[in-house]
Image (cartoon, rainbow, N blue to C red; front, side, top):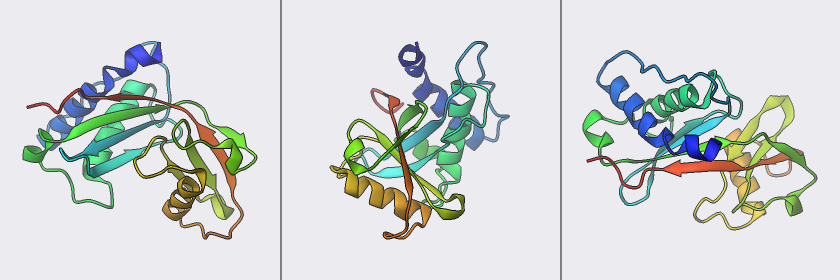
Length: 177
């Protein structure tokens, strides 16, 4: 099952980042028979502060393992909100992997629950913003959609299509030492 497989993903994400920061070749992560899915990798400092988060709604790689390795390296090196993670810093970071289930369209805010579902807002011209579920401080659908709009550069009054999705989350029990 995906839940069983996902338990391996945070360690894989750490290995992928470490190999990249060491200048090694990308690790071979794909596994025969593993499902394909969108994946987000979130990096957090010891105090819980966000340090990087990147992923994809639709998979760019052939399975969740390869997708996790790709997203992990991008979260550590390409999140525009942060400077790239340094090799010495990696050991102190916690890693969480969110595997996305397929999204489903919803009629409006009443169909959203930010604790259970992530949200995708789609605006004019293909602009999309996504917010994962169960984020501290995001307690209602209005806040969740407002943040996703902001991420996509969609104004508050602009019409959007909404969809929701569930995730299977796996996080390290504690950062590697």
